[in-house]
Amino acid sequence: MVSIGTPKSSTATKIILLGAGELGKEVAIEAQRYGIHIMAIDKYPDAPAMHVAHESMVVDMLNHDELERVIRKFNPDFIVPEIEAISTQTLIQLEKDGFHVIPNANAVNLTMNRENIRNFVSKDLNIKTSNYKFAESIDEFRKAILEIGFPCVSKPIMSSSGKGQTLIQDASMIESAWIYGQTGGRSGKGKMIIEEFVPFDYEITLLTIRHVGGTSFLPPIGHMQIKGDYVESWQPHPMQESVLEECQKIAEKVTGGLGGNGLFGVELFIKGEEVFFSEVSPRPHDTGMVTLISSNHSEFALHVRAILGLPMPNLRTYGYAASSAILFEGEYKEPVFENLNKALTEPDTSIRLFGKPEIRGKRRMGVALALGDSLEEARRKAKKVSDSISIKR
Image (cartoon, rainbow, N blue to C red):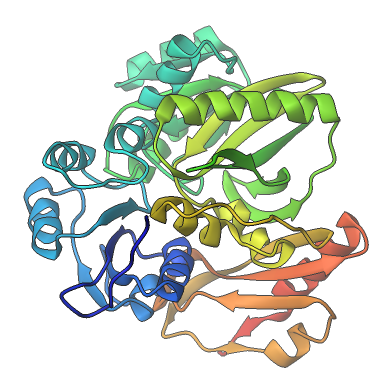
């Protein structure tokens, strides 16, 4: 039997969010609907989820002692990681001491590190991936690239949103790719992965939910990335039924191998009828923000239900849907967004502004959402909305 106490009281059912960005904010909102007491932590103040949490704190989550001290003091019922830059060994120790990590500490440890998850999927589960090698020095990096061949892709083993990622076309790019990778990792300098470039026809995110009743899937999500960072997504992505079934088999095998309950974002490459595993996140996925308009229950709502041990609802979709990231580049403190009235003149559209306190360089500050009579129309409308929004100069 699932029971939930009263927030801000001695009976409170408590979640601590390790990462308080835009995805964590939506998880916090959904958990609030059930009366869950939320503690949001991140490495900087006024992160999006902190705006809707009962408590918040700035914490260096790569610091074992600092992270352990905060979690033990808060004493949560659920520890919910929402970013990669976390001391996973701390979570493993806390789980041994009886804390409940979502989906479990081993799954978080495996998926936060590209070396761990790639070896687990390809060697332990025997699932097809692109060829890959790892390198800890520029000499190893150069050797691995020449063995993999051009073009290839290099990434830090711990990074997100395309940071540190390079598509290497020829030998002249090797040194700059190494330098960029060493500055783009979540935990600073470190090991790199070099992957064969697969000339795939398309890639999808298959949102996979492990819950008390088994495993469920949302319709496949197509997406566009620029330099490894999501800029658009749409749902459902058109694909052969037999290929989708193969994707679901792979996703179920990967998430089953990881174990625990929650929503997973499984990324897959498709070339003809071949399916290649790419990555998996044991939490809501940025491309899955399209579910905020495409479905009766978003990926965030489903994640919370799975965490709490509640049954899955009937999943209904509303046809063709798309999301378009609201991106800005420059230096802005306390940005003010304009043209929202013009942006929302399109029917069946909406926006989410994340409330991030500043922009330094290039940053995703919101997302535009749209429904359409076709994928093309939905994508056009979402892009028009995101392009319409500006920052006050």
